[in-house]
Length: 334
Image 1: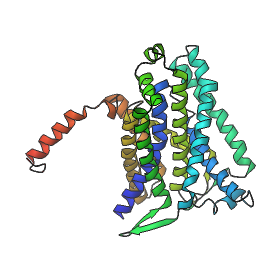
Image 2 (image 1 turned 90 degrees about the vertical axis):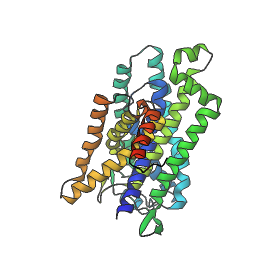
Image 3 (image 1 turned 90 degrees about the horizontal axis):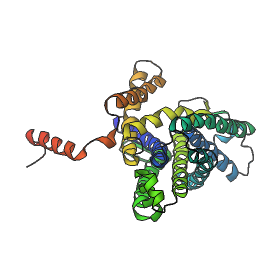
Image 4 (image 1 turned 135 degrees about the horizontal axis):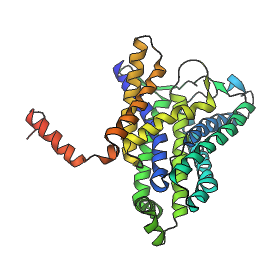
């Protein structure tokens, strides 16, 4: 059904938006192309499973036994707050312990990117250790309860959670960056870190907060993507963040590197495109995983023809041009 497909695609895009906007947020202030960002996503998945196990007293939760308790319902939405905190703490800790000392020594963006690849493997092996302790290396996607059916369109708890959290994150970041001192400082650091530091702004604290928020959003997005998507059968739990890393970077590049709002819009565009291509591939009996060519193609096209992404567009000029086109077609009004 078309409406069901659109709703699912928007929810998928919302989960991607949470993950990608987290990267965009701390990239804007630190300029680190962090390949370990995918591991923050996996942290969210593991954190969700551990919190579910905690709710059940860690009784009979190893292996596939965790799948039924992990069934996502509305009453599990509050679990996203501790997941945000856990992801934020992991992200902030890696920034303070790894990236900040290197940045103070004058390491180049390329060097920081290479370091992030090494950090990615370190975090992944830690997550493998945790997942193997509970026999969670491969698990099927937990079901998501249907909370309403409107006109034949099913709204699940996973869909509601993704759309709701994307909205909350947008409102929060808009308020935080404009209504708080540290948020205003964050914008100043993003514009000119040297001038911001000379003005007395604590650049380390600002960047630490940005990494905390960015990692928290990534973890929440990862947990929701785990709940929301996935083919039948088992999936490598620790690898889910790595599998989402390409769409995350594609959304960040399309939105404009470091642009939070551009990344949000780009994520929804990619969500629709990715799922549409997946559906077409399924109709022709092809592997839907081939739809990963979409973020590859988007990234290449944007870097070649529109390197500043959506953030580089002159939206006022585009609006005026569209208005002229629609007015000429008689569809905009006078």
